[in-house]
Amino acid sequence: MRPQTRYAKSGNVSIAYQVLGDAPIDLVLVPGFVSHVELAWEEPRLAHFMTRLASFTRLIVFDKRGTGMSDPVPTAPTVEERMDDIRAVMEAAGSDSAAVMGVSEGGTLSLLFSRLHRERARSLILYGSWARRLAAPDYPYGPDAATLERHIGKMEGAWATGEWWASEHPTPLDDEAHRKWWARYLRTAASPAMAENLIRTNIQVDLRDMLPQIDIPTLILHRTDDHWIDVGHARYMAERIPGARYVELPGVDHRFWLGDVETILAEVEIFLTGRTSRPRRRVEIGPDALSRREREVALLASRGASAAEIAEHLSISERTVESHLTNIYAKLGVTTKVELVRKAEEFGL
Image 1 (cartoon, helix red, strand yellow):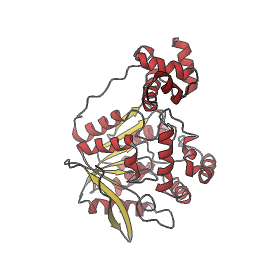
Image 2: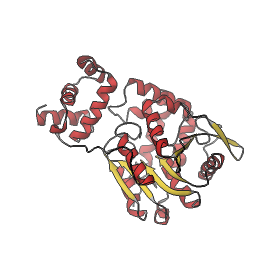
Image 3: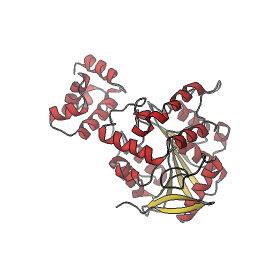
Image 4: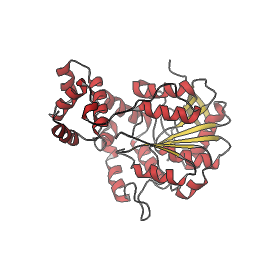
């Protein structure tokens, strides 16, 4: 059952939020640069992720001002306004203090919130995030300003279809059904102009000097081959936040609900509760780790067959094919179709 959408007042702006679960630990999930609390439940893998979080926390999710179900605003909100949105949502949800989990840009905001509103943040979780978005002479991670400008320039023409993201961040899990939902999610979450303004606001933030001052338990999660946010951002933060626990995960997709989500959930649950309700899987590496079906899928994919063609040939669903491909990529240690072809030849699949 989907949770009810409610509204919190942050100044004169209404902020949409939802609460689900009744565990003793409150967890505020701070989304990336755009979100939509109701459309999120239409993607089964994202719904599963939030439902699992709510199995061991009292989960609070929300849309930042100017995005999703929250009030539209004429300009991109300031960092101070965004932090006040978190405060307002926590107060409306009856939460005095909570663990704060920030995703992507939401991680940067969570870092700042946990420092400036220390009394409200009991612990911090960062996924796919950064302290500074752009590269600098003393910071080799992220794109330079010109590269990011070129990427932003493509946004208006391709925002409505989702291709702005998908064309440069391919993943074997991005099947047709997911692409259609993702495009609609982006369109509904923010206008192209607002999305562009939010990105431009994000690149002005530099919290590197603040990292040694973070004094609450911190968990940092990042996928090694994340196409969107270089893993160097996470390694940098992990080295400078005192006592931070850093877990590097296999995978290429920045979107946390795609790929191996159970490992992410297990790490979050252990961090917050000291235990996990589901045993962690040990992922073996190499061709011998492939099941018979995975070998069949790998062989067909390496010969150029699409997910739809593989599904028809093997009489299985496309979703099952995508799941097999994710496992295959992880077990063979590859991230692209070209690498898969090379591995198939190398191992004689």
